[in-house]
Image 1 (tube, rainbow, N blue to C red):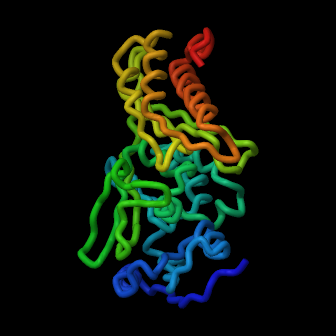
Image 2 (cartoon, one colour):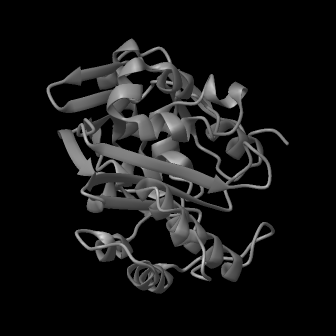
Amino acid sequence: MKASAFAYARATSVKNAVELLAAHGDGAKILSGGQSLMPAMNLRLISPELIVDIGELAELRGIVVQGDILTIGALTRHVDLLKSPEIAIHAPLLADAIAHVAHPAIRNRGTIGGSLAHADPASELPACMLALEATIVARGPQGERRIAARDFFTGIYETALSSQELLVAVELPTAPHESTHYFHEFARRHGDYAIVGLAAQAVIRDGRFADLRLGFFAVGDRPLLTAAAHKLINVAISPTALSAALSALDGELDPQGDQQATPAMRRHLARVLLARCVSTLLSRPELCVGGLV
């Protein structure tokens, strides 16, 4: 299929892009990397009246570290994140996750801002934003505002952005020296949509979790920052403690069934990921045995 007819405008600046969005509202869509927008248009899942192309806005590219904040421009491509020494040092979870995003052709064109604004619940990056306590920076007619990642994703392909706002950057706190991370997803083939995935960021002291944030994806209509993690913080991790966390996770999940997996399968795989995450981060292989998962 082909996209329905639309008008096209190439933004000359962020200000110009915001002006175009303000003038056309819900009828306009932003084109950054195009890896999600163009297929949706060609399938006629969406039919915008105007495409606002921001691809030439150099001010929206780049990765900068200032103090304890890592700022990533919205047009920074997946491949740039994968190769960035700043990301490898200050947000290694993100580097691990990017390697699982689709295939090289997609990573060469796709952008972090486009991925987050698209808000696919099976996407890796939104869950990473939750685990990393990111702040999404948006700009609209009234100026700039910062939205905590936990408030940004509101539903399937829905975010807190208004139709007149442009996602311009992501801000991440740099990882503490003693922090560690875990990332894994189950997919039928590498590069396919995830069946279930987990992005985790942790601080470990004396064999215990001093902090733990678990961002699940492909388990509902948005990424889930599970409260089950609280049952594992500042406690001795035993099979009993892990079992309690797994039960709490069950209570939070509301997965949907599709051609890839049933809800029961997704629940099971989420439990497996949580147990493997804890076992791996604490170097406790015995936690993955004994019937817990």
